[in-house]
Image 1 (cartoon, rainbow, N blue to C red):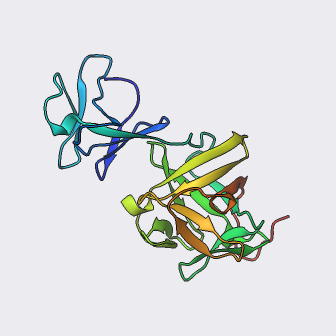
Image 2 (cartoon, rainbow, N blue to C red; image 1 turned 45 degrees about the vertical axis):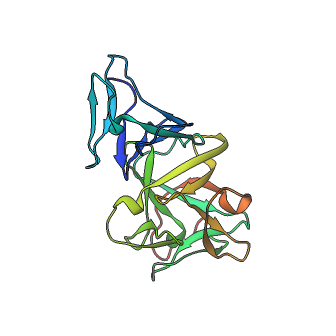
Image 3 (cartoon, rainbow, N blue to C red; image 1 turned 90 degrees about the horizontal axis):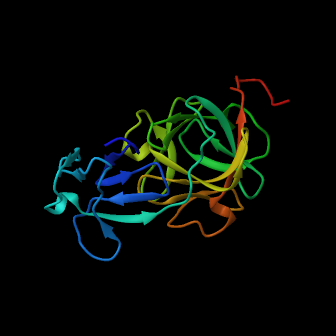
Length: 213
């Protein structure tokens, strides 16, 4: 059926709206079937294949849904951005694959390229030709390829202009990237406060040796 574009990753269905659906096959509170405008029901097979059928019999058609925050809308594929943390420092990706938030000036390592995945998620590419990845227990910038662990959801807080907005970065494991006031990058299971919120600002690409000005 026409309308939202659905994709499946780890039994998850992202509609690109404010709901995310998990194909767990369990009936109960917060579960539903999804019927399109043409009368077909959405299903996800155990092989993560998305399909449709004219009936909704079987666990492949049962989804658990969860409301999520609105996602960013003004970032396009290939946009360069900086990410300023609550301590007013910028997130940096070091050449050794670590992330920190302790630099107050903008250089090449503070500029990231966002690549859209076409379903509301992004990958975040660093100046060191690495992807930011959700390692489950934390975040790093050490991946050579963009797999499931590198797919991020950028949840919006407040208003978004054409040039900037306040976001939370949710990894593939469901945890949020968090920056302590000492500049350490950690993982949080929820948006508990300002430590999980970042101001993104569109930037031009930076070349080594050049300073922002």
